[in-house]
Image 1: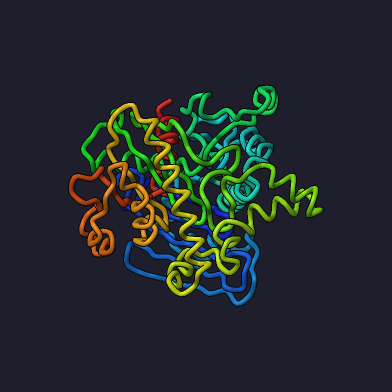
Image 2 (image 1 turned 45 degrees about the vertical axis):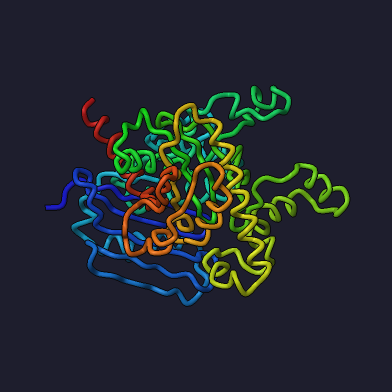
Amino acid sequence: MLKDSILVLNCGSSSIKFSIFQCYTNKKFLSGIIESIGSNESNAKWITNNKKKYCKYFKKNNSYKSLLKFLFRKIIFKEIKISKSLIGIGHRIVHGGTKIKKAIFLNKKNIHYINKISHFAPLHNPINLLGINISIQELPNLSNFNIGVFDTSFHQTIQKESYLYAIPYKMYSLYNIRRYGAHGISHKYIVSKSSEILNKSIKKLNIISCHLGNGASVTAIANGISIDTSMGLTPLEGLVMGTRSGDIDPSIIFFMFNKLKMNIKEIENTLINKSGLLGINEKESDCRKIINAYSEDKKFELSINIFCRRLAKYISSYMCLMKEKLDGLIFTGGIGENSCLIRSNTIFRLLNLGFKLDDKKNKNLKKKINYFINAKNSIPILVIKTEEELEIAREAWSLIYANRKK
């Protein structure tokens, strides 16, 4: 009999990932994604008990809210035994500000705080809050068991010398302007999985974790904790991303404002939605499509090369932060897990630091040879599938279980 399961909602800017896990076994009973939200190509794909697969294509542009309701009413509630076993809902929330350092119950006070700091993650926190509100409406019996798991929490271990910007100190002391990081849920999962694969205690584990997707970040992890990360005050800083610029000279903003007469909203929209890979090649932000035409389009080739060059620079800079020998370089996320081109293009730039690929393993990874794609006499290079939803379920269950024991 199915008992005690957790629904996980991962509400992104244009997609909703969802899963239901059984608490004691971590078995996944339901998983899926609603993607391309905000377009006429939105669709839902899901699977139950690793057997039955379903797909729904929507004929018109549906709102985020309506698609969340579709998820509950047409997918979750249809699986009667699974939905009746739910004891909590775990929500991925991007930004927790300075106050939230671990998973929390989402009461009115905490929801108000998350809304208050939404300016730190304007593309994500409002959508995360929408997921919370719809969950409470659709499953009122679990209204007290909605749990927030935060991408910024994992990076709370970063020290001041890494998280402060070289701007007037009062910007931090009065307004909390500092580096917060993101993708912490993914990086935390990678720590536990790397520890298992490398057979090394988390407390002694030293890795560089590269979460590469439409949003991308790198984290330096020493003795199992985050010591530096590429994303900053918001998820805009750091690597080149699908539509986000990553690092730029701040004076570019002054130039856009003063010389190009762009207003602040236009500048913000440009850096968040019209830059990155899309800004360079002027056609496409989807890395899969860019890679497929990499050798045929010079601008596609240029955008990938810039992406990999920036990534290699971050990896090499994080090497100097390691006081002990690096145990491994990890590629994860949709791009990191699936693109042999991105991995080879990046590692080629790191040969002088002791990284070398085994080309056969790198190209044939889908055949599940193993996690390792490095050649002999190289620092270990691993590809690990991230399981953010599982990490969220674990943290949600842990909080509910601790509450039960009180």
